[in-house]
Length: 172
Ligand code: SME
Image 1 (cartoon, rainbow, N blue to C red):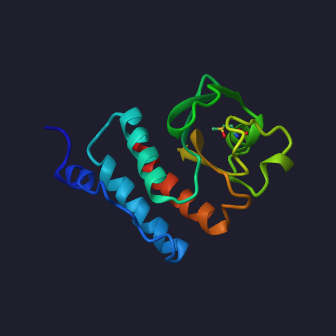
Image 2: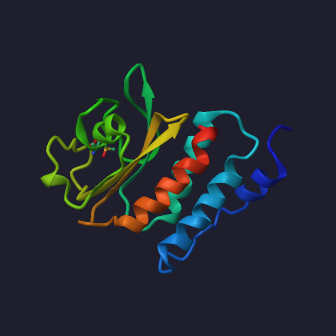
């Protein structure tokens, strides 16, 4: 069996629920460790993205969408996620995701209605965090989070997800 003992043990963490009231640095350290353990030994990027999206959805409160867009043929293509069905292709530079992918910079948007060109996949979304996933300096995907609450995400969430993105970049 290819899947490592550690990944199998991680699967037993079905009730994994880090305390969202603890400092965000600690919260995201726990989530990142879980994501790394869950993907250990598995070379299939789609399977790993699916489990990471599910893990993040389970761990992070107050979300209505969590998942990946992959960079394919010079644009973003919908990847594994949890939430309502979403737009499939996003050109570089468009929307919050396309802006993050083109600039290589995370986008932390307190009010999506105030973001020029925001693409509304779910009318309930009020705030959004998009973090590029890079390998060898190239953006290979973005991690996208939507919340029905305004200003749901802050610098602590951004720093935590950026660290997670770096940790799992080789696994997707
Ligand atoms: N709101 C994103 C589109 C993707 S959905 O939120 C899942 C954007 O503006 O790029």
